[in-house]
Structures are given as structure tokens and as C-alpha cells.
Image (cartoon, rainbow, N blue to C red; front, side, top):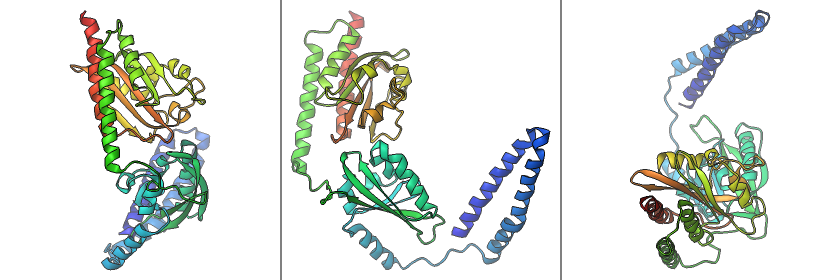
Length: 376
């Protein structure tokens, strides 16, 4: 089966190259000899390589090799999961196939959540390109690699990542085994960090959400605001600090207007004035929320340009070190009144589904307060 898949990939590449040659027929007359030479080369490739390969496949059949013993596979899986070092098995695009127990403790990411997502997405933005490049090099057989990276949730702790290629049986492509080790004497562990008992922590977070809902309702009902922008500013001040490091408010839907930007007082890389000067129409997340009216919750945002760029043409999410975000439309009876975008940065816990649900409830209250001004 692996040979058949490899032949199929090679044949697909050949078809793409033929399509390029067809498109090259429009080149100037003087360049046609080069195109002709290339076409002859491709024909030789079919005659000398693809056709004999096809004959071998049809002669031997495509029956797969006997599978490995099931008990042996279970043993190897058990060893992988219980290795004392954080280990991940990824593909050439850094997508996680397996993450062992030590890896979940080290990264603070559940194995079920990590599987199917790029491991590079759990790293600081500055390290992602280098990690993807080194992974691709190892996967194509350029030898083992090692580099220092930083987890996005703990950017101050350097992590050594060692990469080596593996060829799982019955698979046409190589996988990459990644071993993560702290540069310090003690590996950071999500379990080892001091924190509340899980049940108590959940209760505390729920109580904090109830307090936030109460504070928002009180702010909207006491001393009603005179303008829609004032409603947004009042809501943003309730959310700022206690719920999000950054709060950005945009009024409208078809024509968005930025009214309020609140950020950390000690933010050095990007200031509130950078986001105030930004055109909301240049922020894909905001435009999509205003157009579709659906909340977006992202943890470790993959697209650095999702919130546009600042005046220096740098991605806002990268400069602000955003680790999670909520982009919430303020909707009433299907009509969008505005959009609130919330950022959490650095080591702060990511937004949860419960927090997104609470924010969705508050968004309706804010939209009601804005619509009430129009009825006066």
C-alpha cells in the first residue's frame, strides 16, 4: 500500500508538471527549445521510471505487508506514553500525532487537544518559523536537528527541542520525534506549579464570572450613557484588567468605527495609540464577526494577521504576545451593533468556553443598552 501511495504521489507531480508545460506554450519563440527539452525529459521520465514502476505494482499486486503483532504495538505505545521525558510525534508540517504524558505536563496542553494541531502553534511566534523549517529538514532526511524554543505560555523559559526522523511501518512518509527539555535544571510542569485544587479552582472561576456579570449589569443600568460610544467604553472598562489584558471596541457593522482601546499600562511593544489608529476594516476577525454575527474564540492564534497590522506593518497579535482572544459581535434581533475584541497575553490562562458563554450573554446586554439609546 505504501508503494502504491508513493507511485500515486509521483504520478500526481508528473501531471502537474505537464500542466505547467502546456501553459508554457505561450512563451516567446526563442524560448521554445527550452520548453521542448523539458517535455522530452518528462517523456523519458515516464518511459524509464513511471512505466516500469507501474508494471512492478501490477505484477506483485498491492496487498499490504502483514501487520505488526498487536501486543507488540500496545507495548510500544505504553512505553511511549510513560517515557519520563516530554516526547511528541509530529509530521513534516509539525502537526501532532501523539503526545505522551510527560509532554502534556511539560506544555500544559492536553494530549486530546494537541492531537491534530501544529506543535509550532504552542511556541512563541518568533520561534515558529525556525521550528517548522527544522522539522521539514529532518522529515526529508537531512539529519537530526536541535534548537532552542520558547513555549507561548512560558516565554521566559528556554526549551531545548531535539528532532529525529522516524519511518513508521506501512507509511510512505517519515515522521519526526521531538524531545523537549527545559534549559534549566528543572523542567516546568503544569502539575508541579502551585495552584488551587481543581474543583476549588473551578468554583472560584465560576464565582468570578458571576461577579463580572453583576458588575457589567450594574455599569449598564446605573446612570445610563448618552451615546453608543459611551456604552461601549463603559463596558470595556468593566472587562479591562479583571477579564482581559486588552479590550478593543468597534461600533457599527457595515462601517466599523473604533471607539475604545484599553491595554496594559506596562505594555512596551505595542501601545493603545497603535490600535486606536488602526482601521477596523483591516482586522479580518472584526470584519468576520460584524458580517457573520458569531463569536470567535482562539487559543494560541495560528494566523498572526488575524487582527491586522500596526503602523510599523507588524502583526498586532505578535507584538502584543496574544495567547488567546475573544471576538464578540454585539447582536440584537440579528442586527450587529458593534464588536468587542478581548486579548489575553503572556502566561495568563486562556479564555475558556464558559468564559466565552458568559461574554456572549454580556454582549446581548450591551447591545440592548446601545439599542435603547436609539429608541429614546
